[in-house]
Image 1 (cartoon, rainbow, N blue to C red):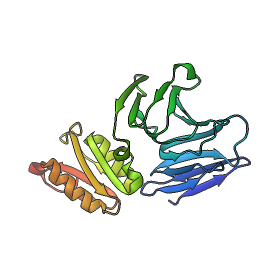
Image 2: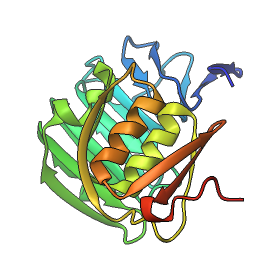
Image 3: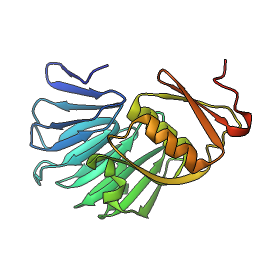
Image 4: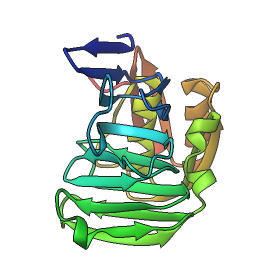
Length: 234
């Protein structure tokens, strides 16, 4: 599947499939780098008192400052309001959490129209919203490292294996298969270059985890414990 940009009478839908990334410029000069398996919807021209866009997936925004027309991102049950700044938003519909990481400036994050209850973020802060519990958690983060995918890296800092596998699926357009004997609730820290192949990534990952092996068949990757190594499941 290729990058798709669909236009209606006044809206543009930019979809980036798994395994790809795309950088676009919005009508106001805002630059958006869109990650794999993500959809950004925006108007051909911004009118009125706000610049509104919708995101499903992950993107890094470098918003052109305009104090008279705030920039509003709608994603899931949240809205993110900015004047001009740099920040990363990860909001895949199938994920439990929506995260916002601020690099520069300030943003306000709130549930839909409850702006008065919004949380104002500062640089190097990460806001985690739980779709399951409808709760926010604000923590310190290294924004540059957290958004390293925009610099051609794939970086995980103390992330669950389940999250790592899901991210690799989007990045390389593959699918992982494994049973209950694979513990995906362990945390790992690792980093890859953007140009490294999935074979190279899997070799490092299997060495890091230590007790798993893998086999690849097409775009399917089968994980199993080394002591039970017996080939690809039927």
